[in-house]
Length: 293
Image (tube, rainbow, N blue to C red):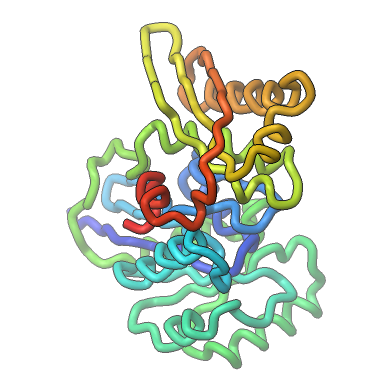
């Protein structure tokens, strides 16, 4: 029996639904999803296996004009997504008319591989607006296949996945058939904690935070985890902890509940907060946290 396999990389502006789509395809919450822009910082692989196919999906950070070293690294992950893709998914939402970086847009326009333009969030539009948007993107990218979807509601998500299978090249699998992602367990612990910080803190705080899991000890009935939340300034440390530790406790409780679902096991989670000055602009620190590789 012939076997298909390939890399399907998802790109687009911040907050257009890239992570929602990938999680819908994979059936697991691998990428964190919040209403804030720049939620995804890394390139995250999600692997979907069938008897005769392996789809390796790649969620990437939203395309922005970088303002500091961390954002430069994030855009490096997007750039790499162009280099190894067998199929490119360019995701836009209703009302969008351009990509925030013209160089990336030109790469899509001149792509030699199949490109699926997914027009997302059609559940919050009407027929007239949808037709106008489809026409606009047809004019901008005449060679691209356009599919209106709602990643959140699941509308046409299966149709897109079936189209991906059709377009995949014949190839043996790249990863073991029981593998779900390329990231280690500690990565997902860090992301679950960071997701709760994005949800509960405002302004600059979530963007000044990085999470590092220092210990992960698994026994038959429980996993004991110790994680450190890094901030850039002392004032941020106080905000993260909150009055008598109440804010940090809320983050810990919510992250623990999600991790118990993710690992299907009881979790004991200890959280600490440390100041790591200007880590977002420090090349050595960025490398340590898995950026700039």
